[in-house]
Length: 129
Image (cartoon, rainbow, N blue to C red; front, top):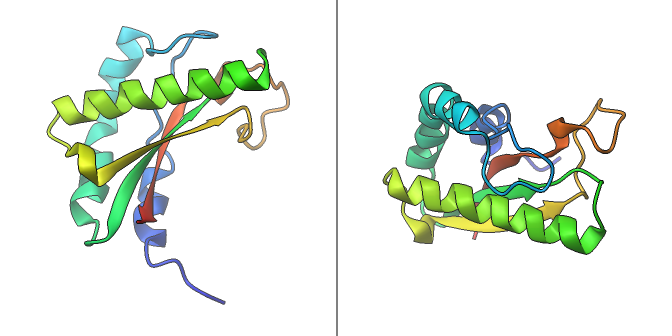
């Protein structure tokens, strides 16, 4: 089996998602973003700083299943772009990141309600570019 060279960094990033979105919202609740900034931004920064040449930080926007697939793709894209821009303000380089929307296509494992707020999130992965 082929081993993902970024498996360790991606394992670090898995719990570092941005949450706290109301349905249809592009920005997370301010209190949730502040909590994320203190607790999880350092985790994302650490993985970002360890990325080798030729890799980028993928900023992945997600939505719940309450809207149409098209609307959810747009919401996911806007959420990811908002977090991308937030990271740029924190010193991340825009050219070392890529924005992706998964819309409602990657609902959280273990969550049975497709409209649950846990699906409304932005998460991260290190990918080869």
